Length: 343
Image 1 (cartoon, rainbow, N blue to C red):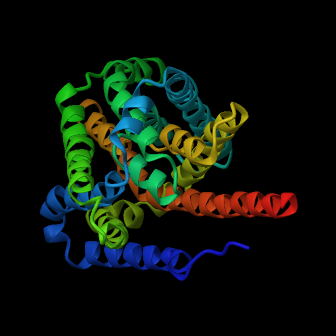
Image 2: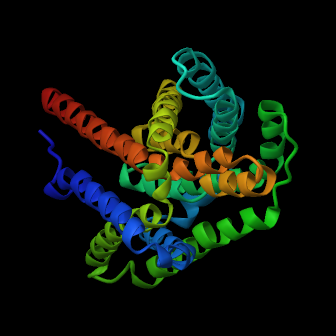
């Protein structure tokens, strides 16, 4: 029977320590949080994504980008299902459930509702590759999805924000281009060059193992920096955190499994289905925060909600990674038992 290794089992503890330490530093050493966020987060994300890129084969990537059937499924779930699901959940919780118990005023509830919509309309074009890789999904598929989403969301995000929040916004292509260059192009080129130069060396497998450890450390570092720089939202608005968290937990969990099981129903394997699941559930919090700051500067709870978003997304997506690793173990055990019985 397959079992999770010690590092995987202890990883949630390391994440918890990084979160607590980040919150503590955010309270005690807040004066460096701005520069640390500006430079630390991009560096951390780069070293999370770069190790995963060393495992990509350029031919597989080309086939994934041209796979219209798979891309079509991803696009449908990302743009026809995800925004309306998150809007429906936000309306249910903030205007029906929480309103019934008088937990928020209608003005604050409206602002938080808009903030959650901003979190839900734009699919992730960075961290999704980290979650896919950690869960042993198909990285070529994940990269191809990111490439498609980086183009599509420039057009769809303003339309969806207008439909769901009744507000006109403009998405700067340069903001998305910057994210694509930092979190897709540069790590991809570095990974492909590394593989090209070293894949025939006898020590290449050891390099991959070392990069895997670097990826884990980079993830913990990025979590620490995010909570260091943005964690005040949790401490200043604790009730808002659990309210937003209730919506986003259901959203991530439901949408991931809609994507994963839709792909499995369409006869995709575990790796491809996992890539689809994370691509349709992970959200682009950088875009949501940028829209909140520019278009909703007079409504502080919109910006607060979008700032809380990434603080919630990281532990929630890591929970989904844990679910997938266990699911993969069960699938492999079933395959092994079937193979033994046939032998």
